[in-house]
Amino acid sequence: MIRIFDIVSKDIRQITRDFRSFMFLLLMPIAITFLFGFAFGGGATDSRLPVGYLSQDDYWVTDKLHDLLADSEVIRLEENPFASPSDLERLVANGDLAAALIIPRGYGRDLVRDKSNRLIVIADTSTTAWTTIEAELLASVSRVDGAARTASLMEELIGNTRTPFRYAFNETLDAWSDPPIAVVETTSSAIQTASDKTKGLAHTAPGMMLQFAIASLLTAAQIIVTERKSRTLQRLLTTSTRRVHILVGHFLAIFTLIFTQFTLLIIFGQFILKLNYLRVPSATFLVAFCAALCISALGLLIGVLARTEEQAIAFSLIPMFVFSGLGGAWVPLELTNATFQTIGHLSPVAWAMDGFQNILIRGLGLESVLLPSAALAAYALIFFTLAAWRLSAAEEK
Picture: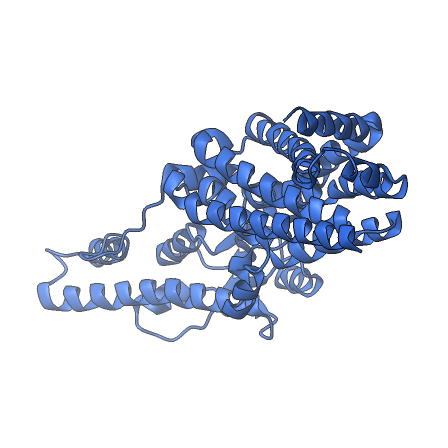
């Protein structure tokens, strides 16, 4: 055991000797997290599609249509009473508005009298945004039209004295917002917190943390390569130090580096980025612990395989980009198809991302990270076994 700790101590001193490299591995994930997080929605406050609105009609039915559109969760009305139709057309053409809606004069009265009067819509109908806007406009207009028809029928059947048109119209329109049967979707407070306050950061922060943890293997692998080039490894093998002591010593040194990096970035994410890592501390640190085991074993394998410093650089950067890209560190796997998600889970990064997102985004507990943690531990065992086998084969040669 003393020999193992001697190797760990020696490796850590070498790793931390270059303070600039250590700070690079700590500060770069923070900087990239801010950049990607806010670029993909971390600072967004309203994601609805902007639609210009110009009403040339002052009838009260038209006001009801306006209120429905203003309360929409899909479109955001951009109102300028001084704008002209040509102004709206120019804004749509320039991409400042996704579409524009003009209410022509007399629209409300014609609707009440069951006469046809068309709305004027300015949009690029070839875009996917228009499909969404069209559906929302049709839904709102249909509600107002249906309420007007229902009110007219009630007025005819019951009479003006008992059921005025306006009262029946309002009651019918209100019934849309309070149907007798409705499906209510509820979201846990943990998920609401992640989606409302941190949005892009809840995905980007764990992704960058994992990516730069793999990048830090470059320094650790170079230590083993230097040890082999200086023949220190060969001399160690001729002593009473067992091969397993050497492997475990290097492994624990890399693990200490990675887990320390994880811990610092988790603390930073919790108190600076306001990510709820510590909502279930045991779950968060279990995923971090198993991810550190996996990445450390990968670093040990890279160090054993690499013969030169150039190979150590290549063997470190290639897994960083491949595992991060496939594993969803850059783009959530939920946004890809089922085939890519299956392929992506061949990367250990995908399992680590599953664990962190179960905590940060999905609001789940300790039981939700047991499978991802087990998968990471299995990868760690595979990488460590391959490193031991490769070192043994190299020694026999």
